[in-house]
Image 1 (cartoon, rainbow, N blue to C red):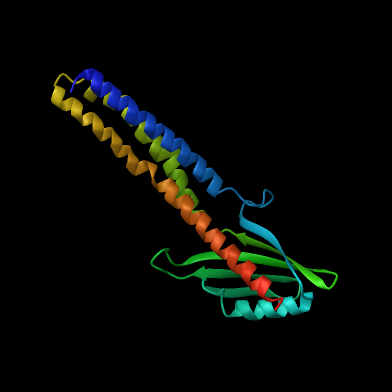
Image 2: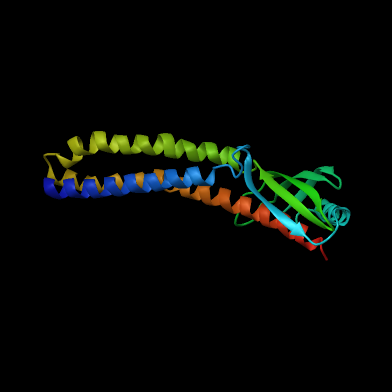
Length: 209
């Protein structure tokens, strides 16, 4: 391989790597951004309007949650009355997600005439550990891999005297091992948060029937 061809291959691989890293950085920040600016632990929040009185809504919701969040996991209620329902959900191991993930949630019930407004929040959960590991990749490991490629590939491979050594420039593509994990972590974080939020909304909406 000529030095010019090796230089071109190196620049293309490095440019794509930097671009993917920037997208990974964006995905990381978006996935682990708090849903409530006032509380960085909130990962999902919303409000549900229910056509039923608050007492009836609280009784039905509490009864349902004591049996676990349907289709998701077991629930340990901490506070359960006609104003506040708080607790922790544990998701079991399945073929598509790791088990043992805990998500705390809070539901505040308010009377609005003969109806009920329920404000829910999903807190913490999977964000802690995943955020640390994902941040390790996007802020340290990937920049280190890119910096190493910039520092060592041009002088030792691209400009190598032996043309056969220049073919090793394609090994620069090994940085892919540092580029994909943040996208996985962001996907898991978003999927778990949405699952818990949808489960709470389903429970609350069913109290109207």
